[in-house]
Image (cartoon, rainbow, N blue to C red; front, side, top):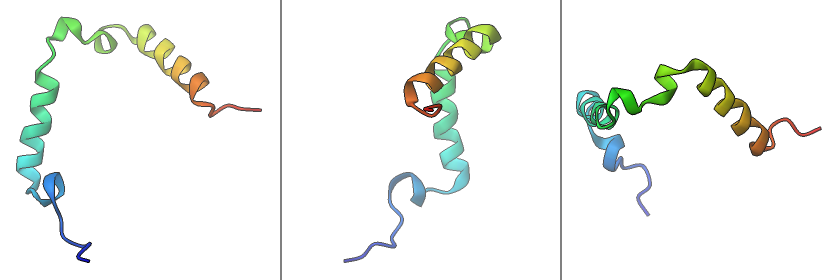
Length: 58
């Protein structure tokens, strides 16, 4: 069973991966990227995510 062959994204050269990844960031208009506009909103979301992940269990 061959398991060491690179497939998909891993098989592409670095420049091609960067180009594809860049398209994902460009697909959302700047005014809809709320976390880049509002640091407080991003901080609240991070705290909420940390609480629900169970990472702070005591």
